[in-house]
Length: 84
Image (cartoon, rainbow, N blue to C red):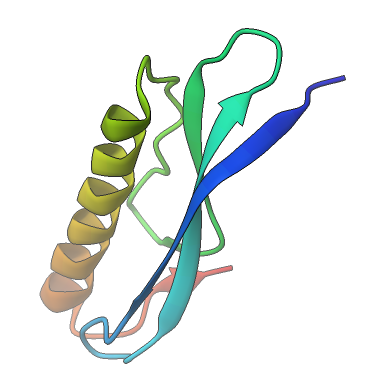
């Protein structure tokens, strides 16, 4: 069993070609204290980061970079490519 604490939750909206709103979280593993991120939605072709991070700041940065990559992919495709 894995237990994680949500240490931060973020919302992003206004993505190109959709205006979509989505959420993401920074989690801290209860046993080892490592951080990870969790997202509600993905853009086709962009992999959700699945690494663990030593600090909350690293995990936050990974989440924001992930959304930046999603935005760039949506601009390039010209069509909505979200997958829940």
